[in-house]
Length: 364
Image (cartoon, rainbow, N blue to C red):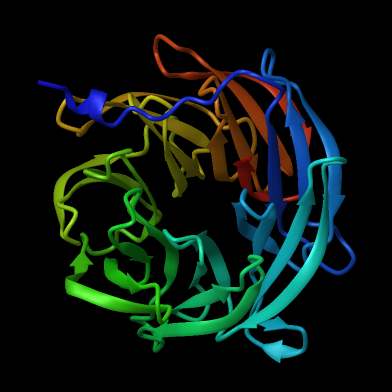
């Protein structure tokens, strides 16, 4: 019988040219907030290829390789002179590795902090932390954002205000999951690709321990396990996913242990390339926590390492699975680590890149 680890193995990328990645961050005024980099696949060194204006605070983005389009969520409350958040679209030119702004749109309510594509690649999902809402945006035949097809606004009154932090489908496209940091819960939806509307799943409100502050999550490749990092509780949770929209809590472990920092706010979570390790970032301790995935999908602490800077808001693992890159928001740098194949531990940093307030890194 196949082990759980065999089932969740991630696909491998072929050998070839050095991988490239986009990096977005917090930018104001005339500052350019979107960058294109290339990483040497042998030693992890990084060079800047280009930079572009992606509007104010393009703090999170997603990429459509089919249309070569970057969709950036502008984390603001006013955009183009209107109340709301922003959605800026840029076209990538692979001949000279440049980005060109081609579209801007106001998204209702404002404060977007996460954006992802629908399973059919025909829509964008946006989580609006600042306004307690999520939005769905339809794309036209060329992939350009066309119209908002749905908005859901949750509890907006303090002290019980909702703060959606992430919205994304599982890898199989069965359901759409929203983390609500303010309400300590998941909200689970089905998605109607015909109308572009979210439909609350049966038993679609999944509560987690009070005070946890659910932030980001990652799935195993077969979507049978979800790993949730909690910003306020400094914990990582493992859930079993039955593919029917039901999440069953299996385990809660601490993300802490690197040092005795008084305050800590975990930021991001990702699975290693072959599914053997789960990684999380700690803002405060300024560390990366590493867990070994057991046969049943639960986690055993493997260790901690430095994040190579201050306030690791986001990180990414390169397509080969050999390097881990950390975006350190407050120290204005991207730190590159080599992953030890035997232990799964990031070692280094082997490279340091100066960038203002990096908040989102993605290879493409």
